[in-house]
Image 1: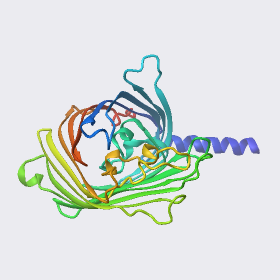
Image 2: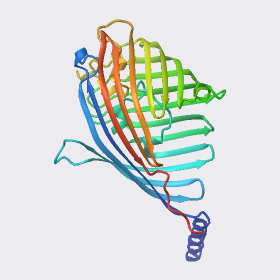
Image 3: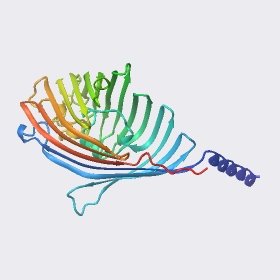
Image 4: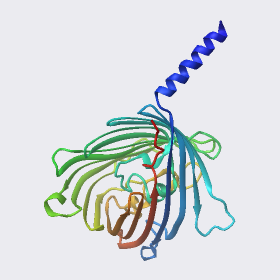
Length: 362
């Protein structure tokens, strides 16, 4: 009787799988990048001079069953340029993804590129964006027409020796209320807790609501937009301070682009959104980039002043070479504490085969 029941269950599972049309799928993305920074003009107070260059390959394979479900696995391989004899840094990935019309769910270890929000460096720095390939947790997205909303949980630290418990909630949204006017936000809510050596528990939160107007459709430009918003933070080291820092500032970003060439200027005035950057934790080590995923420029000032400004001007060119290849070149000029801070040059090439899949023969 048990064999009969087992045979029936196996047959039912087989027929169910056949009915759902299981088929293989794959995704491959390769990013080559060169990011060079020169900040000696400001004494490297807000950022250090240096070069980040390398290539990262992210091949994934899996199965798609039904119209909405897929199970994917693979890895990322990061190789820095100029490191002969040093092998690539490997990181595995495995996730389930559900796509149903305007709704997407991902769970597991999935690519950071699954995030489609336009996050500024106040949320995620260029270095994190280029070399940290995966999120570990969950992703929910809702997208319709030009509007998009998402929230993700990234559990990126388990309590242990030399490793802090920490997680991030990352979210963004933009809803176009008219063809040219949108309301949106970006935010990160970061819990940075203890390790076996460190007893600090730090709250690192930032929310940036904004209004954006894009006049491209009236002018023949690719982009002609103005975005204005408020950045509100909550910063507290529970081990050292009873009261929290509540940094507040205004942010204005203007972008113009035509034929792939563009100019973008971001201006912020307000308090430091990284007040603990140079502070020492309970082990005597500076928090720095261990705590903050945002760019170090969001310290705003290092002289103890209550408020200051941060201005970044970008000249850029970006081009899609067919369906799968994208090139981008940027020259960035930074101004802030003391005037001219320094500049960066970025070259980024992406080969993205995410849209390729095996054809199913009927």
